Length: 247
Image (cartoon, rainbow, N blue to C red; front, side):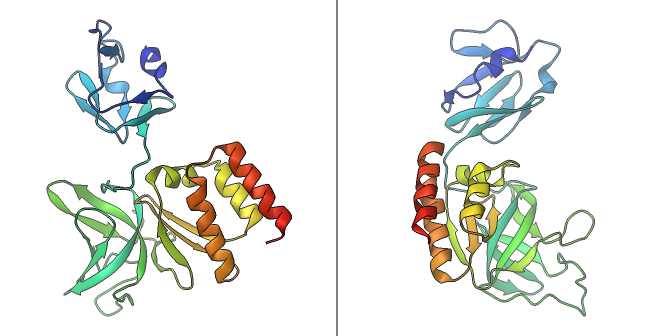
């Protein structure tokens, strides 16, 4: 029953487009599911449920993940905090027991000193203004200040915390970040074969890279920025050229 919506996967949609949760629709709407299946559709970024309608609020390409998740793939650079996403933040200040962290949103997020693995009142984390943090958003909505944590649900750091010594931080589109974080990312695989490097990607459009030397690090950063608007064929051609050049 989801086939009408699946037929639109890969198509460009604009804000204001809508899908109705019934099989009888007007000329400007598309059937989404049968009357007995309205709750089976999961809306990702760019889509919003409103009663019996599904609304598009971000322009982009409609994507689908089995069995029933849909979202809009768009090349946005402005980040809107979303609960559960991992981001790269910059510590901007400390106020009492709370750090203020810039995550690229409209306002700064807060981070308690207790939100680190093994942190206690006596054993506080060594966090300084200007440090980079890889953290997860645990509170993110329009009515409350965003909150971060550097531990998972089991209280483990799991790769989160202060990092970034000797690397380079820069911004890219949110679409490029999703491509890099995909389970079978061709871009990431091809890049690591050409230039072995450390790469940290935040869902807020920030990338941190570190390779063998400053020159290699700058090359990797420039490659990632260039690949943002390249096709797969153009990217492979560029990578082959660099490999033959022996950089």
